[in-house]
Length: 440
Image (cartoon, rainbow, N blue to C red):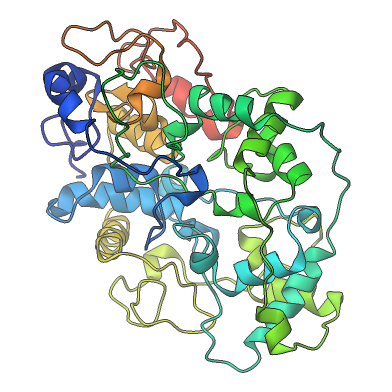
């Protein structure tokens, strides 16, 4: 049987609501750490592994196997392993495939150079991405293959509305007050109103979801993404923030502050021959890209791969191998992630039916959507100390302060809205399990 999720006393680095009260007297010392005053959200520290927020937040190398197995189940779901390897039927609701970014019209959002770099090495272009690399560079045809796929994707265009010029100063305020910094890096060019005058900003201790591609997006494309992210991010891992067109333009203008479009040189240096669009479409399918992505085209279904219950968790030739091979998805996993995935695979191969209790199922679903970035449930989650001041204008983080303006607990939901911060909008499919699992 899978063990119960970690209790508050066992939890790792994310403080829960009651944790604020026990450490508030020492917070000013923590906030006295100085950080550079000009850092922009796009300058977040790079990650060296795929960022899965709830896994990075709660699971540590010293965890026992029973607890880490649950982290492995989150990784199986969020890294979309079941998109290629069918899960056991009884496990599909927990680890079933999620939709990757919708690539319809992607040629209007990213130019061919940006697409080529992202396909060539996702982790280099967007450190922390969950997109695996497929081309290790060991096969001479790889650059031409990448060129063909990038050519095909760049041909997928759709009109983008022309936004009005945004106000970056207002966008900075919106970015830091509407809830974006629950997942993304706050900039040190903004000071929360609730931060005591004598305190310096503290850098978040938890990793932020990467937004490096905001630099590659044109201003109209970035504005359109912010206005309606669920169109191109149907998994709801980036939910909608109920922005108006003006607000989306303002945040896009802030994220593009000082932007100098990159002059990519790789394709020029390689002097790659042009590749036909039709070949790129074929190679897109042959490399199983349609397992995660929709392009609006009809691709033939890829040949089936072994089901999850047939995989060898300790194989040195598959996705969990530390050896990079061309054609094998390379996620650049950390040792802890590999261990967790191996444990999770062993569990579902030996347990034909999951034994998670309803509270454990709820924790799993909240973990997939990263609800713990804002809310606590049963002593787990809630905004970390460095991010908490962005959620309210009244929280001073001193002993006995009123914490009601933090996002409400999901253990005993209080639907009183948080001033400024907006409850995101998710797709119905992504949140369909929650009403049956949340307390009334």
